[in-house]
Length: 298
Image 1 (spheres, rainbow, N blue to C red):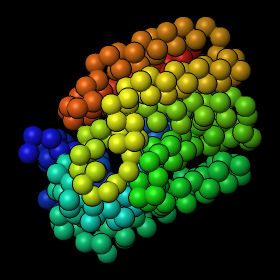
Image 2 (image 1 turned 135 degrees about the horizontal axis):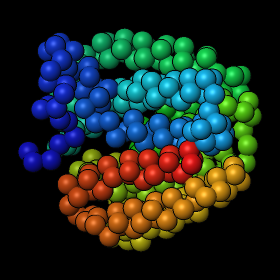
Image 3 (image 1 turned 60 degrees about the horizontal axis):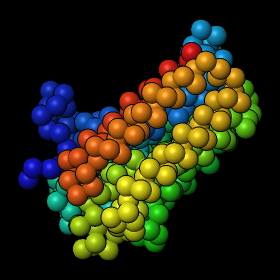
Image 4 (image 1 turned 180 degrees about the horizontal axis):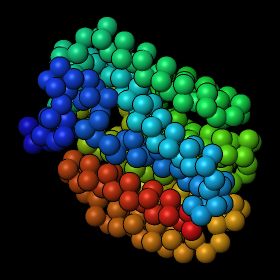
């Protein structure tokens, strides 16, 4: 097999043998998912604090908590996804070697690890204010049910966007104690961003998904996917920039020119019928998110 989502030759190969399957179950070999979950929260924390130079000790602590929390909750989300999808994963070439699908990790062991991760995530959330805690608790049903969406709707990427970008609301609330309009705009923009990058990602599996009856925007939009992705990205850039303006971003909007170039580069290079191209283009969204983090901190 020339295309898989598991990297057994990376740093995880240096872990003890008994630990490796659990690290793979949490997708620690694939940090892009953690980045995409983390960055909207970081944007919001830095923006709400007024930029990197104005962050106080509390803001810096929140920034670090979001980093640790993203690793933990992304790992928990991956376990939930694999628990729901282990039968589907067995039928898809790219995912059949995942720890649960292959039987390397038992369902009971996965549930124990999931419980530990959720408790750790709760401990981190409880370090924040009441509004942030409330919002964080509201995301849990989304995390649990998101993997089911591809069974019932052609737009599971939309539900992923609702879930993955909640950090924009939580981060703003953690700093300010409330949810402001800038955070809502950034959240909405983040949903469109996710619609774009996860449509690209879903093109890796569109043939297998058709065989097993799994739905996605990649299947729904088909050959028109690139045009839709361009539209999703344009909406994302507009809404996030609007949120930044209302947050007083000022000169940092110059970074949005670079961000727009990065998205245009994605759309130009992406070959939707090439799984390797879809994966590489999807992964490049970390760079887009880091550009916007610089914009928030200017």
